Image (cartoon, rainbow, N blue to C red; front, side, top):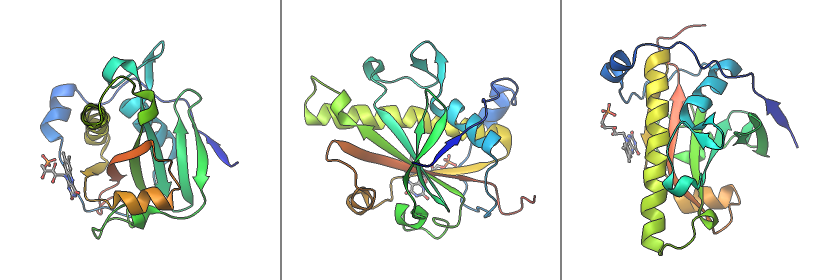
Length: 192
Ligand SMILES: Cc1cc2nc3c(=O)[nH]c(=O)nc-3n(C[C@H](O)[C@H](O)[C@H](O)COP(=O)(O)O)c2cc1C
């Protein structure tokens, strides 16, 4: 199975928090410029990396950590293993376009699919599970928004996704539920 070892995330620096909050925004004018591996590693750590023993940069209900991130690039879909900071190929197809219906979807270099492993959530009725996984997704998503605002990337979180079709295309199990998708990339004006 193809794996990509990401460089150690750089977890110092960035712009001051209040400035980052001032510029936090949704944008959709993506360029096709790919993300460098270092940027990707930093983004993932900011989003949902480990910042303490068994605890992460985003909270999760009862620390269940049920959210997994599937990353869709031109060269395939990868599951991020946060413990080892490696990307493990899950599908060798370019699935970016299948993650939404808007015109930037498929053009932007990265689509991140939030997938909840609902089997990790025990002792709740179905409604409680859905509330939990969407809340937990929101924290991770906002972390990505803030990292993007700090680093000159742009992003949009999206509910407009055909979940049954995407689940089928990714061959997800019934207990794996897609919550949202988030597009990340550089703005159109960006060069390099
Ligand atoms: C739960 C959720 C779902 C969203 N779904 C979409 C979407 O499917 N497509 C899209 O272009 N924007 C989507 N957005 C982005 C919102 O349109 C955007 O956050 C809103 O217009 C406010 O703009 P701002 O993020 O720049 O403050 C979504 C945002 C949230 C929080």
